[in-house]
Length: 281
Length: 243
Image (tube, rainbow over all chains, first blue to last red; front, side, top):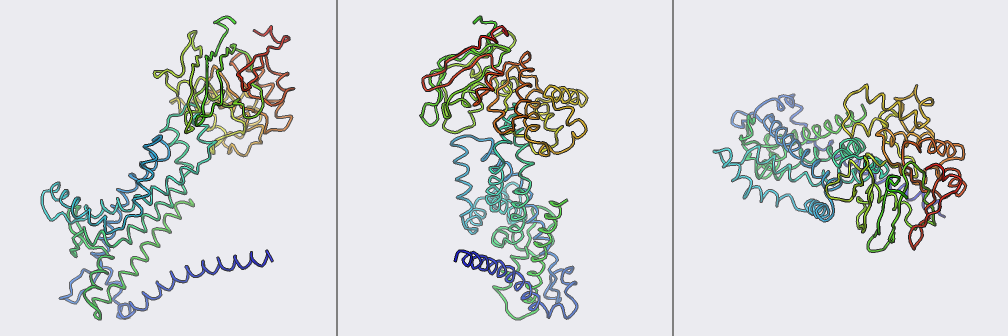
């Protein structure tokens, strides 16, 4: 009786695991099939390298790829040290009420809808950056990546604190009893023991940074150009998909969103594989 | 007891965990260069008493102490809970060994060198010398000298515990606190640790929590029994001549 239940439960879990793998593959298949007219013409790769100029029949997504790369990489670069520091405070260095308050605040931040971050960005961050950069609209790579960093940090912080908290007490006791300071305990014992958790948090954050649509859509300005500096406006692949779909339906311009989808898919997969490979080394 | 033979003084020491009193009014004197065994039923606060001497309890939420603990360093008593007394300095002078051996996930050599790294030693040759000396003191050198780069967890339980003792010794502490150091070990390894403690007596003041009465009889100069009403001392006549 009990055994039957065990196998049934096992099968159920296997089924749901297979289903999630299947969905991922189906999405890729769907995008490839719908993007087929683009590839058939043999200009899929030229799409990846060309600029965007519908008047000249150019539907290349190269500027959007660069926009995504710039905003996502910069966002992660801002968020990673911030998250590592915050997690260190929450789980190791801060004590008592302050640590408790910080932890609760971070947990609450994970639940705030993205659009709220975008909103705050428009009304607080964009004017600030406009003042700081002295010119432009303030809707630029810098605004979007700073806000993106704030958006992806809470999840990363939670992952990091989780893995810091899981370091065996016997290790931290050893560091304490041998006269280690809080920072020494963190740097020599806790961080090396939490490498895996840090990497997992980072992978999730990178995925989220590449995939996020709303922040870039609201704050980056959406100009189709290759951003040359922090203060340039840029459009991400995701924002491009959203903007084109909202305006159009059955043109080559519309088809280009599938190329965007495929590229995003590959970006994310590649990052995850790279990080995993660096972990196994 | 003369003041110059005392290493540790506690006065009206009380310890609270979430308002429950764990230690009650402990006023005690622990003699220098002797082994004091701390005995008593479970739950009376033997390990807690040890932790009040290196302030390790401070990382446990909901705890507080009352009273005074003074330790004699360089001929003068210091209040270890004084604001001006740095806890890291205290813990470098008061080593601790736990019930379950707790090597860090690194090589044997790095485990022993770890406290030196924390204390800011830079000279590699000096570190190597100190590591060798500590391992010799802990009777471990001959067993590990050819495998110093191996992971510390590759050692047996008894070896791991001696490794932890060596790690505590490498900073040349004045005091060594041991919390049931042999209870997770087999008899032979336990005996080895007992001999080791006896050999360390002329270097350190040793406080060891123990459940085994025969072990206490073999190694202790003084027995301190913790009970709900406080701490009562009993000195073994045969070993009195030791100090």
